[in-house]
Image (cartoon, rainbow, N blue to C red):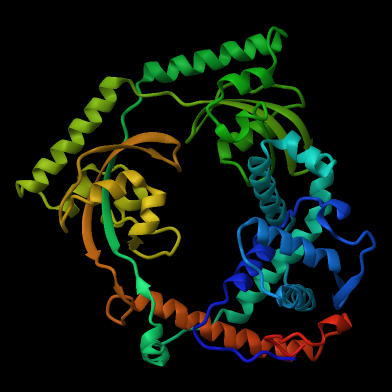
Length: 462
């Protein structure tokens, strides 16, 4: 049975389920007796050759509950429909000959493995959770992930040409009941000037000398690579695993990867410099384009005088802006060392939305230091210099923030929230295109579902 759609009403549990299905590839193994699942599983749905098991639905319900979502009585129906949809996308992608390369799958698989390692406290714990070696875990999920990526590619293909005009955005806005217009939090537009303290050649040489000492000690059997990496590496992602990284060709920065592929198993490289710092690398294993290494990263630190000098330079820039010697835009070009914002007049793009506006409540969680500074600032004002950690470069920098604009908390309107409304209008249009596609493709595809789902109020005509 098809469920009639109500415009502009978001069902949070269904959104949660969609996110879980798209992002949570690795559900932890479940004990049927412990978690209340039947010992004997059964097929409850099928799309082409792809089957959906009763346990698949139960696992997704458990994952949603563990993340704090309240599931309604129709949770089974909604999860099944999302699974039918994902499988239909993957099934049609194969028929249409869409392709995902092995390198793409391996890169995404490695990223998700690392995410899971972080959640359970390392690679060894992950292997204990699954009672399998990492290689076996990858083999088990590689095909599942490929289908998931094919589904995403198919969905992008279906909605690629969806665009909305300003007139359509206005019509979308006017259709929203006045008493249903959402309240938009206070938003700010920010700019920055960044200076990175200079690292002396002496500091670099000290780091390289230390890495070479460790290499000699390890090669002579006086120390183990794993122990040195665990105690001294500046890479937080691999340090807990004794510097261990599993990767595929194309995943790591070029100098690092070139050094890794030049090694024989067990061999340790000379010092390798990358944008992150200096490394020594030991090759553990290599199979085709897949390789396992251990590495020790050391990041040379600027001394106190370098940090003080960076603060002095950025204070000089602010003084010149305030006395009118140069404009903000001129100061960006002359002083700022952050390439991403330097080419954009210092504007900080919100990575979560792609907009120049930042929700103040979200900013409180993302960057409490900046949020606190903004409380005392008016539009056009520049903050005091702040020492911060550049996540991409993994090093400290000094920056000042300029409050370019502030939009107070308000009820959504076309003037202040056009971008948000445009995105919502595009999403609705995409939903309409997807609904038409699903209804057409489901008529051409073998689809089966268990009789227990006959009373479900589905969004699509299955």
